[in-house]
Image (cartoon, rainbow over all chains, first blue to last red; front, side):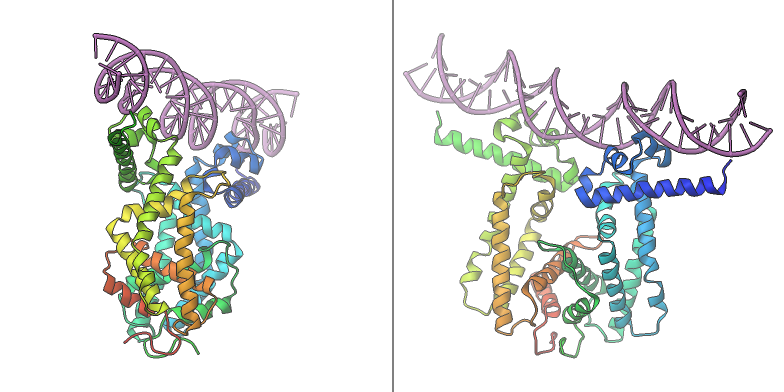
Length: 202
Length: 202
DNA sequence: TTAATATCCGACTAATGAGTCGAAAGCAGA
DNA sequence: TCTGCTTTCGACTCATTAGTCGGATATTAA
């Protein structure tokens, strides 16, 4: 009864629901992402959504877990390359930019959705672990880089905040969303993330 | 009937309601800011709130208009000083830091509340003008500074995004809210906002 | 004191949205 | 075909929240 095909079809239908959820989010914003609208968009009945997901929160969580996994997947090989911490750090940021540009809606969902679930749970959600993993990798690289004198010396937590802010600012602040390619982004980063002993440009 | 005192008392009661709104926001977050909770907090009946404000949106708007006015007020004298654009620019950022630290809740409200009102209105709300004013002042200074070679040369809109991101990142990213004094902040800024021709630190 | 005006408010309405129910339709193996 | 499992779903419940209603109470001016 629980044939391979059945399982695959079930997973396929779940993916349709996740897709519809992201589409609604992208078109109308997080506030309008209701189970009724998702049902309309995915062409299921509302009750059918609950046949596949126990709750709206579970739909959100599944999207986030899969999204973070995809994001981290794209970073895996960087860590193995043997280049300087600074280079690896910037490589990572560049990959993140690519990820954002390829699926902006997903990335925005990963940033915004957490504020709209989880009202009073003290469970650590799975996606949070992925997030911490990324944060940890970046922090480690930054600290190694500071130790080697590749970044200006300052507390790594503060530097992480500033750099995270730059990243976020470039991609999301301002009137219209930015299209920026990897080279332009790298130039910006080289400008804004100072090295201790040289002029940052040229 | 409409005596001076009456008018003052009315304005005073409105300020109590605004205060209660901000308090609820600071303690429980924007989602929990409902008219019922504001009523409890301010010790008015719910219907009384509507005697002073036509709608919840009006409460929000009034807080934002007053908040932005207060913020801009603190910047007025800077523009008149005759120092370099870069100096003025950084002065402004420092004042903003001070403002944030003095009333973090208000500043966060100014950042967050807009996303929770205005669902489908094409009126430009009053606070938006204040916001644009600040944005315009900073952009102008930045452009003058770039022209004078006090900042590294790049499109001012991109630079604004990056700098806005740094500002936001330092004050709001990370686990716990940062306490940072003006001098620490200035050091950070001097590190992260490069000059074209000199090493950014020392 | 009295009439007008200002202030106050709990209970109600209307809308919205998450989640449930019970029944029906589709499908596979015997 | 019959039986049981899978899938579907519109209509319902329940909770929440913005905003209203109608009347009560306080204050002021005459």
